[in-house]
Image (cartoon, rainbow, N blue to C red):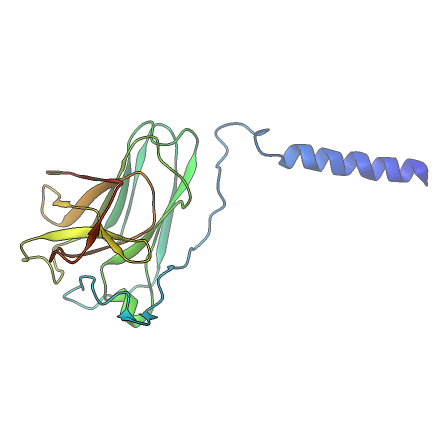
Length: 198
């Protein structure tokens, strides 16, 4: 009986060692794939969190609501449904799961909004994100911008890509991002680098 208990302990120790973080090769992905949910609820006390955001001019039919890609220190790009993440070399120090998640409910899917991942990670270099611009309600407005959700919509600043189809900005962290017209009623704080051109 004593020998049996020792065998079980040895087997459990081996499993613990094999599954311990930091013991695996650096090329092993560092996050588990998942389909994240948008943290925005459609309704709050003051109305809808989504009402401020731009809408698509044509109805969109979303059958696949999220995309993922492992990107390492060499950098890379994830492009999905008009949204994109462009990771420069050196932004992450290990292979990391990047995701773009779109809302599928009728009120959310008409808006230009997506949740970008990973969460709770600060990038060593700013990562560029792109959101649809052409074919949206803010396409011909004077001050289109990208905003991120931090209990309220916070202005990131933005510039059109060189082909004019998307708005782009840079960020050191991910959250839920959307587009809107900057009418002076937005909070502006930290973490953004406005870019021009493509």
